[in-house]
Image (tube, rainbow over all chains, first blue to last red; front, side, top):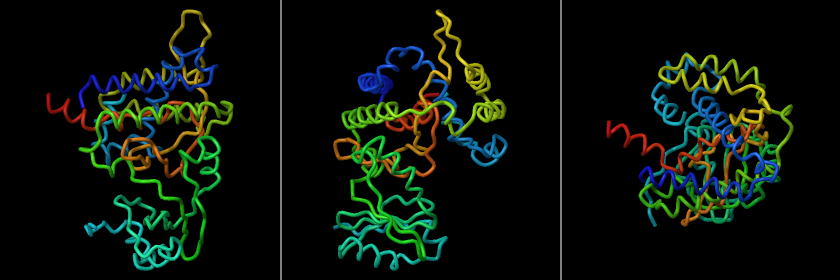
Length: 72
Length: 247
């Protein structure tokens, strides 16, 4: 799959999401989409690093850094 | 019918429970003469399919309150009902068979059109969650915990700038006319699935979602927290490999 397809799929996602989202969210769509980048970024870190912390993550799972870098 | 060997789950190795013991119970519950372990097994469970049922053996109890809450929010079309069967000598649960996990379909069989169907269903699923948001005071992780976590993440190599940006935007939003920078508290707090990846999403051959499994570990967090799961369906892992390969 190429970059163009990936971008297209993201567009499809958000179009469908906003079609079905609560109206009070749709009113602040721009702010929400900006805030989602923050939430998703923290989620990526939390999901990979977890509550054991960075030191332990780097000791045992540093190969997951590529996922973190790719998604932040 | 293929008789390719299936891996013995880590759960069976650890627990000392025999596969045969599980098969007898699964056959009895499903009234099926043949039961087959699922291709991918969890670390803490052993799962087999038999007829119209999936039977799962676990050493620990499933928090059905969370599962039922997810069903209440998303409906049984997205969250298959789970029935508790027994707890001695291990926990046994059943649920209706809903098809293969997305990853079991085989990456070469997943076309763009199939991915598109999955993405559309995921969008509907995420929007559903937003219709059932709770107050920010019910968030399962408090802002000070998140802030301390991000401070620690500043020690990760090569992503300091990105982590600092997350920290800078964590706080309370200002309702300034020209301030379009979203903050975490702009987002509804929703029930967030803790492991929303290809292993836990069942899909039809056309890519439509037929069930989302394993709601253990779900928490009330800001919307978007687990949107990283979407990347698996946009082929991030392969894309990262290709990008690296291209130098």
